[in-house]
Length: 232
Ligand code: SF4
Image (cartoon, rainbow, N blue to C red; front, side, top):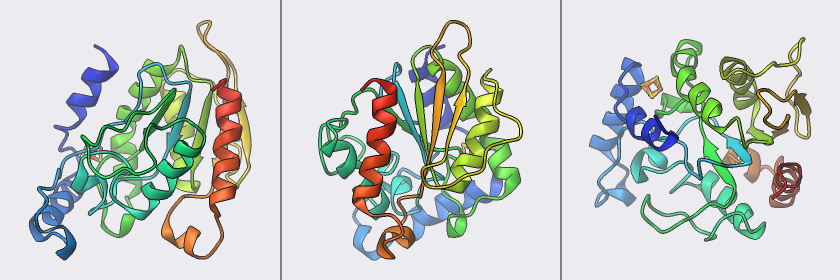
C-alpha cells in the first residue's frame, strides 16, 4: 500500500464512538456562518507529499474547521496562522487555506494529527489517542526514508508523537524528553534513513496566539529551524 492509499482508508474509520458521534453532530447542527457548507464529517488524513522531510503534528481537527472543510488545519484561526507562516517560508503555495480543493500545495512538508476526528472541547481522551495511534504510526513508517524533522505543536502532540514514532520503528530517547517551546530531541537513524530531530512548539490555537504566548514570529522561527534541519 502507498501513503495515498492510507490517507484514503483512514477516512472510513469509525473506531471511536464518541468522536464519530461528535463529528456527525457538528455536521448536522453546523455553525451559522457555515450553513451553506457540506461538512466533511469524517477522519482527516495527513496532508502533504509522501516524501516529506518535515512533518508538523497538531492535536485533532476542529469541529467547524477541518471537520467542515475536509483538510487538516483548513478553515479555522489555527490553520490561518500555520499556513501563513508556511507560505512565508516558501513551504506552502498559498497564504490562505479555505477548502480541501483550494489548490494549496505543500513543498517538502506534511501536516498530520495524532487524533483524526474532532473531539468535544478539543480534548480527546487517552483511550481515543491510543486507538488512533496506528494511523499516525503507519504514516511515519511510510515517511521514514525521507523525514528529518518533526515539529510537535503543543504538549499533546509531543506526548503523542513519541510513542507513535516508536511504533513506526524508531528508537525514542529514555527517559522521554519533556515538552517545551524550543525543546528538542534527537532520534537515531534507522534502516539507512536519516536521523530525526523533534522540535517542540506551542500550539497555534487562539488561546496561545491571542494571549501572545505564541507570536507569528515565534512560530516562523520554530518552523524555520525545523525546515533548516530538514534541508528545506
Ligand atoms: Fe478512527 Fe482515529 Fe477517528 Fe478514532 S479518532 S474514529 S481511531 S480516525
